[in-house]
Structure formats: C-alpha cells, structure tokens
Image (cartoon, rainbow, N blue to C red; front, top):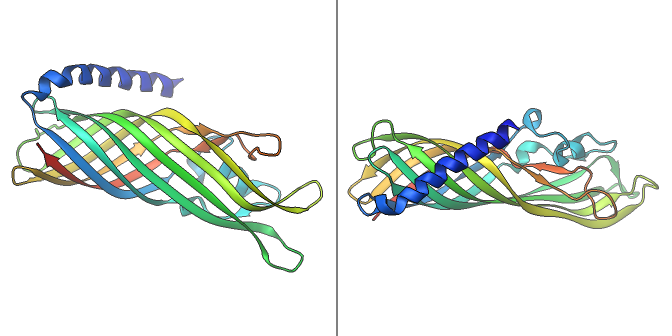
Length: 241
C-alpha cells in the first residue's frame, strides 16, 4: 500500500512538471544524455516473497547459481528539459539482459554429467524523472537528487533440461514469463559541464518492482514472482542543445 501511494505521488508531481515543460523549454536548455553502466539486483535478503530465484535456490533439489550472477551491464538514453535554475524533468529508456548458467546441485545424469539450464532475465525500463539541483545547474559541479516512475518491461526464462519430481525423469523444456509493471525510481548523481555543450558525470539509481510469472501446468514456473529491483550505477554523457 505504501509503495502504491508513493508511486501515485511521484507520478502526480511528474505529470505537473511535464505539463509545464513545453513552456519552460522555450527559455531553458535541453539535453540528450547517454548512459552506460552496471545493474546489480537485490540480494537474497531483500527480495520479494515467492521470488522465482529464491524458490529455485531453496527447492528440494535446488539449482546451483548465485543471485549476484545476474549483475550485468546496461545502456540507455534520456531526454532532459530544464525547468528553471534548479529543476529538470526527463524521460528515458534503458536496456539490461543477463544469462546465467545453472545446474542441479544434488542430481546428475545416469552417466554422471551435469543437468544444465540457462536462466535469462531482461529488463527494459521506460522512466520519467524529476531532478533537483541544490546548487543550480549552470556553474561548475552539479550534484542532484531525483525521483521518478518507471514502467519496467521484463522477460524471464528458464531453458534446458529439468527433472520431473514425480518420477525423476529428465526432460528438455523452456519456461517464459514476460510483462510490465510500474514502480518508483530514486536517483542521485553528479555532473560537470565541459564547454558549452557537453555534460560528463555519474549517477546511481535504485529501482523497485516485481513481475508476475505463470505457475501451474506444464508451462508454469516454480514461483509466481520475479523481483526486478536493484541498483544501477551509470556513467553519463550529455549533449546540450
């Protein structure tokens, strides 16, 4: 409930900012910012209940991998609009995908070889943000804090060979769950202008959110959720116009 209320408050503030943006943009700077960095998912202690990765790690015959194996690179781009000397509104998109190999921890094939799978997570957020620059954004170093709302488009799959617990038969399969969810985003960063057009900096942002997965039947996962939360650390390169 608290997360839902917070998301609505952030969304309302962003809506007001973007309604004001066209008029403000006539007199204020705009920029396109490219980002490249690293996504680190939540650890085991912070993940949502019924998370599929936790379930796979704690089942009767668990898969052998680590949550940290899903840490990987991401890229993105963002359009920023100045709203006076201390505010910016932005909208952007980014992309992350990671494939993690796994095996059964306790079981092998009759010939002693491993029973292998590939676990793949993809997250492609589309995010609206509002930034505050306490020291202004036109002179020297420019620290900022911000918040926003993100639509997290996700896809999670498990593909490979699996064990049927009813008779221990090994069979090939592919399980896929995908969709989107709306979640809050919080960020902070520092940038520095290089000449009149370039902005170089770094940013750390935290995203929350969880996705639904199908369960039951032959195509269902072992659990109904995939936690999409984690930290993004990005290098940023902005171009003013």
